Length: 202
Ligand SMILES: [Mg+2]
Image 1: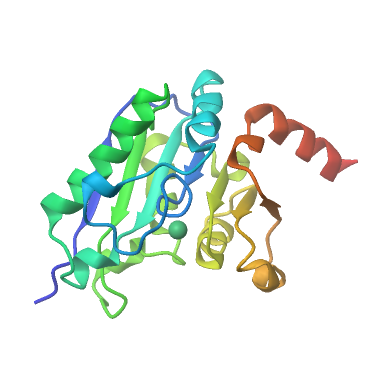
Image 2: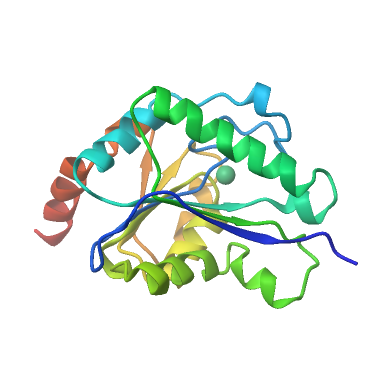
């Protein structure tokens, strides 16, 4: 019997018809220590709160979309997964930033149940958020640290992706999707998006 579950957390209202900032969690919002299971050890990534607060201020919904296969693998239980998520959001709130919704896919890689449709690189978390909240996916962006994040964003029809860290830069060409690499999360803001789009369309 697999342990996997998918979880959706509704935190703040989302106005219909708007684009969203989708965020991978581990390695983007917080430091990725691998199957994070201890709320006490959560550390935010440099610039994550600054980036999120900039989108909060511009009324962009911010939505976490995170694979948590440690649940399905039996490495941690549902309570632990939720406690870690809560701690991340508490740390963000301390820095004046919040997320509007959270999608966690707790299936193991070998799970073939319908729950696995949420597991990136599949676009299920993004498309479900799009349908539930009437988010304009075609104008939405995603920040991730793995090529599977970019694949999910491409499959969901997002506008573009931001890849932090350079471990997967060589794979960018394999995804038919506009991907920007960034060194600092704080460089990603609604204002910066406008200038990137202007550059691309000129
Ligand atoms: Mg990640």
